[in-house]
Length: 415
Image 1 (tube, helix red, strand yellow):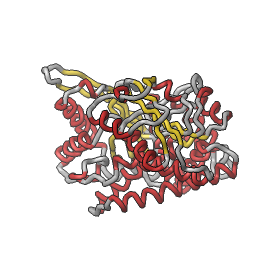
Image 2 (tube, helix red, strand yellow):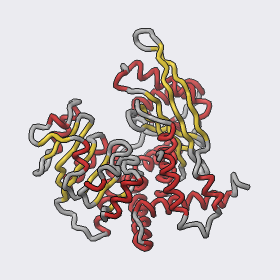
Image 3 (cartoon, helix red, strand yellow):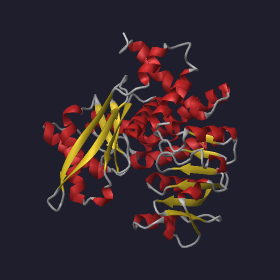
């Protein structure tokens, strides 16, 4: 089954809890993206040659405006995957109650193969081509995998050159020096940590010396590991693109942080057993944190997962088939649409701050963020328990209900 059909099926199942309140035609409209774009991006390389890259853009829905779309530079992509991520992100915005609806842009490129100047030309050409279709009340981009504040700065600069307008609010995830939000790059992992902690506390599960495995020592994974170790966890395994490291007595996160800041691998850690990313997923731990890409836990390995709780920091790391297996094993999955919604929430804060020309300090951003996410977690947990369903199912129900209610009130585009 395609990734997008999987999301459609999950939305259909969530709708079964709401069918008495909303006409099925509203659901059918939500099952498809508003727009799909494909574009060719010709770039002059450092050696004078020209290379053309292909990009896909999916705008899923903007019933509550504007689109909030995320720019990913990665070599492995399909149109189906872009559509899937854009729909999943609409649900993510809805579950935390922020007025953004999602799109996704993916340029098929391995940025590690580009020089800094080539990457800048790619970023600027991309924005120049899309500038006529982007403005703050309609369509606002932000960084995702392999994009960062520097790339957002290049894109903002190009947008302002093309339009002749001062417009810091048209892009989020920017450097602090040009209007970025404090706490933006720690938000995803911090939020994920608070959601997990709120869940465990609500279930009266002791917060003490939990064994944790984190798949992918990227920005979010490292921040979560640091927070967990400083609070109540023992991180026994981490990984990156070259593999993972396992030590049953726990890893020294300071050493991992030093290795990654030096552009080395987790596998260079001096004391432990080298494992694969696949090995990490089936370790005997209390909490498993998939923080890499999509489709990591599948029907082929779900039966061997030993963790009692899975927290999805990545988007779509668990396939629907694996989800069913995990439910039958009584493994709790805190779903991506809830667990990693912090990044988009802080992006929303940044957009609001740029429009108001008022900038919150780190404490204010984190306090507001924690309140929104704790409330969303409480809503999903209580309704899942009341209806004896998984957290994923009810997160989808909460999200879909808000979207369908907005469509119902507008009576558009169906009337």
